[in-house]
Length: 101
Length: 125
Length: 210
Image (tube, rainbow over all chains, first blue to last red):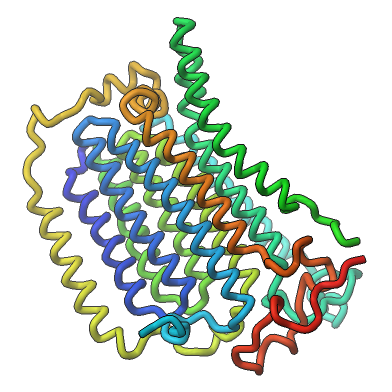
């Protein structure tokens, strides 16, 4: 435990912000999805770091649950993409706007 | 931390093996590229199109089921090490029942996939 | 203790650079592979935190399953256009970068100026207790099957919902018996060129069965 908690939180913040940037700026739906996974990595790191420094197993439990949610989200989200892939040939967030407005 | 030295050594050996094989093959092999030698599978079926076209959805379904049961494993592993340490019979029974409920719920997904024919690869032939 | 500092410096720098690569590279496949690098280095940080179980789970589930699912999806979709078109949202990027920088400043400020962890906040699992229990997996199990029993069971319902939902969404409703081998790979000519031509479901030639 020679590394301070702040260092872990900072890395978590970096990963989370990079994920946010990816979600906001990329056009490809797949990369937006991958950026969401990147955000979850930052969140998991923060959970695990707090769990270790607070000497509580709740941090680990939260990471395991968040992992389950990530897997469920990836399975359903990518299934939507697969279903979409039958109708369109381009996967850009600014083109897939049929349901907008 | 010393317990993880083995993991680091294994990772380094893995990288060294990959790099060593590639560099070794590159240094030793003769270079005389002719058409048929550059095919993805030499002496195989000629490829049609490229690998970036669309493939059948069944691959996705199998991968998705793999993810779901992989996450189940994450819960099974702590359960197994915990179960092995329980001495009292009623504790064991309780833990067993908990896991039985968990597995039974996930078995519904498996049964659904089975009924919908996700695992049948050659139907229609 | 300096070995920990060296390890942490390496892990954090590589994780951040790979995270940057994840959102900047053109190809979705390369992006997913960069995410694998991030996942491995975050797993290394879990080891530094003394949580070997989470590190293993991270590698098995994220690198081994979720990223594989992403790569399978990329195989299913026709992504040839993604190699040539522009990759960033031109209108949104001017707002995206300030928002991300602002978010980072905010979170980093909290991370650096966090309150001290006082002794009375600490839980029942100091490193010695975890060692006595035999490791982080055992320690996690002691809470998972007592305090967090309901979340544990609800997780299975979540996975069930995800699995059935994904199967319902991804299967082609018109092809009850799934596609037959001949249309495993659609030819290259059929998919480019035409814009939003509906494929599979509405096409005149459904999959033929033996």
